[in-house]
Length: 296
Image (cartoon, rainbow, N blue to C red; front, top):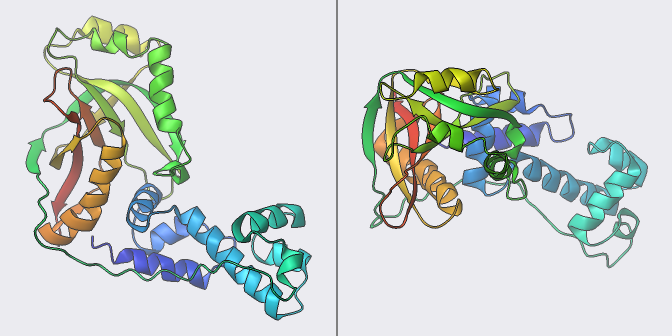
């Protein structure tokens, strides 16, 4: 799917800016799951949908307070805040002035205009990838649900914190021990979300194959672990080169802005995953496996 859908989503949000916007409705409007909507929007636009809505509402509120006799209380309720106090705090953080000050001459206010998506393709850059087909796969994993709004939110560290907690609680090593040396690769699994869902599943796991200790798998299943299955799928595979998770976000950004716009593929709503090799090449943080199919 072309990322031109982002403009359609922005137009929809602008048309309903003063309403109690349901992000399920926005995602449905552009024929995407809630999960993929939040992920793609934040990567391409550079902010979450929540941040976009908040910035636009506070901009419009300031303009209306400045040019009309709208009261602060009425502005708070009109632009989606439960109390005048929460509105005033958000307004002051955004503008550097209070709502009351906005009504006075000389008040300094910030302006955040509606976004217009323009796709610019620049030649000369190389994005290495390979195509792989996988039949049905199984993983044993520790799984947790996360709100779709947390996807790619720079201020949200819930997924990295999940990794940290699993290591600290010694929940990762028992999975690695299911395999012999040289096959202890780890997977970060992102589950597909139905269009009606507000959360997505993320799992930390290992592949279950013919060489896996199945008795060990059964013990883990009895102790809070989950069997995660994927369907036969084609994947676009990218190497994330770097020293931390920032390289994953950069690769996702290039996937949406460069790969999808130039290759004729579209992302499917299947499991995507990060593959962390036990012994990888120098400088490789992980591989990113994204399910795709030919568009059309």
